[in-house]
Length: 331
Image (cartoon, rainbow, N blue to C red):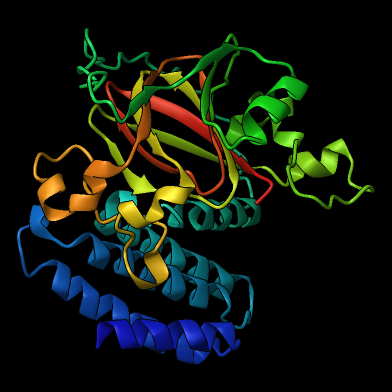
């Protein structure tokens, strides 16, 4: 029933019938939420977390399409959308990645709509706090003895042309060293310098009228912050991807796009995500073909960038308190 409701909600949204989409998505959210609470959290099927994220995405988007009567009504719609997205991110965990971009858009609109309040009181001095960072990172559990494993290549700040010809054209992941990355909070967006690599394309047809500024505007930026052992499950993205590590380190494992048949994609709408839990000990028993898939692996450290080609499957686990910025382009 939940799957049918979700499909009908998506169809209604595709047809622009947002009132119907809202009703169907709301029912989907309630029903799937009940299902998530039927078992122990660690035993919840990944597919249901992903479906919950999709239902929350549709419901929040429906609120954003509600008719605007006045500024107050729009504010209520934005607040409702934020609450829905927040629930989706909380319940879906790493399987609700698509909700981050919508949340950022909604929060930006709400901040732009709010009027500053005059306050002549002296500023309060902020107290400096210390963030507890483990003295030593978690071991990455590398697998160099596995004949299917290839260590990720590391190259020091290649030229734009070398990066295009050696890695983008060959769909070869690589760790880039010798570069710098900036921290990211909304008020300091300008602190992020988009690398020149993000202006490159491997498509046969490019618009000759596009200039550098337009290319940069097409870059989608996401920030990722989490504690040790935060996992991004095995999945792929359709765009070119540079993962820039700012703080901490991450274990990364990648599989070529051509190996999808060995990686057990989730059937249906969520086929960009694998059913395999990469580092779980029993995965080769549950998913026997997975053990035949060759892969790259490595550790991404502070100040380094990982190039992930389009549709290249990747699994990532943080080894310490970690902050990184991803740049998606040429989707």
